[in-house]
Image (cartoon, rainbow, N blue to C red; front, side):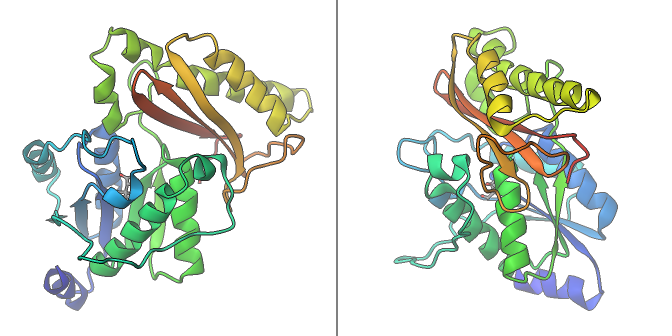
Length: 284
Ligand code: PAF
């Protein structure tokens, strides 16, 4: 890998990097296409990272359709696909922790972001990208990685690409396959996440038009009420967080345009789903 990357450096080529855990869908491909527009070469990694899965999470059943993934990447003319069998040697004991962002998502999955930050920094060190691409759907992950890059002086730019959605609004995710086909009860129920966030968006727009503000507590209540209408969905949390640090706003904190991210996690059957929107929505 180092030799391949060295050759690109010799030619002064910009490398756009898309880290993935495979089971690719259109959302991943939109990252690849964005990387293609902004770089000379596109590198993709496929590695289901064990350190970011907590106990009882779906590491063992995480889909691994490698041949299909490689075919999709071939069609996108990706230059390099990095598929390590492991990135952790025996006795591995070095981890990266991004501290000081007590987000709800972070507290609900204590070791998840440590695993993400660790594997992403290893991948950055191996690939040495010019630009790295992440999907907005994993909102707190985006905030965590941006902070890590900023605070650890990684010499690269993090690019966040808007979430791609199915026609009914469900955010694209590799985990959606667990919900069953379109029309099945869990697949239908999953749409409630987007509907709840839409209610939050409208509430903010309405308040703004009337020259009013909306608090984190008020916003969460609206989102919670919508999710409660779907019996197959169990709400895990709603969060209103600062986009810069990931820190949770106090209940009476004001949701601010382009600096507050509202995110949601819910379980539909056995499947844990997440989604988010940026208040006022101009993106990162
Ligand atoms: O978003 C993902 O697929 C993963 O968290 C990532 C960034 C590839 C790290 O394993």
